[in-house]
Image (cartoon, rainbow, N blue to C red; front, side, top):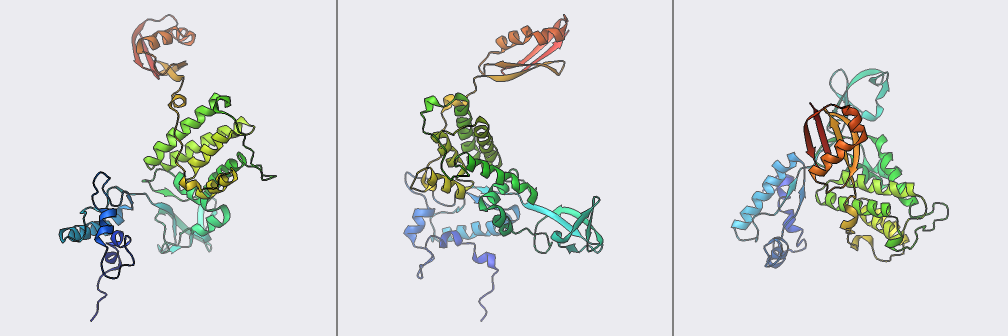
Length: 364
């Protein structure tokens, strides 16, 4: 009798349960183990898969049936939770150009030549269209090649920096080098490339310049929020900004700043972070460390830039306190010499104030 009658994905609809107790030959899963990992627990968060990341097509096929199986098992009393997955996030696709000949057949993207704005395969002109990446479309990019040339950390950073996680983006191998340079600059801020010696200095926070402390704590605050919101691209941008600040500042980087930077990098580029963490003198792994916490005193700007417009055109920019009142901001804007000159004695019909960032003046 044929027993293999179900598609492969159907057999994987209960994997989140089997992972809990994979060597149990008597039961689907030990009830106590299932209760601990998946079920409700008194005084603790409900168990289960906290975050499920999958494409939209995957969600309406596999995930739909995985939830159905769980509900059936729950109704039969075999599991303690009806919902195995708490949050779903649909990620975008990494796209690539598809090249097709006159017959509409896909040709190998790696063998296509570009000449004078047109594309050719074996001398024949082909069309180009952005779409899915896959073997059948002959445009797949193997991560192994990128990892071999630039390292796994660079590959990870590039994929996360391409854009928001839920938006599809085209793959561009040439853009990978940008993240490679970020890691090179990070390394140079901690290690002397010639000698291999760590260059950081031990100083008290009180002796670190205020601008560096502001850059550090703004990065910490921003990266923590971005990671929680799965905004990996903007988290990388904030790390890049901090790293660039340290590079431009010149001189040795304070140890406390360097260590915080390495900890911010660790979830995104774990290999270089682990290496730098050890070089900084730590014997325990960076993966066991908590993310640094920002000092609110350095996160709040001492001043913000207020744009002053007259009839919708920018006439002045003012540095003002972030807590300035609308009345005070209006007075400061109207007294600014550039604003006075632009008005040239004209009366004022209306002043629209949105403290602390905008003043719009409508002349009479």
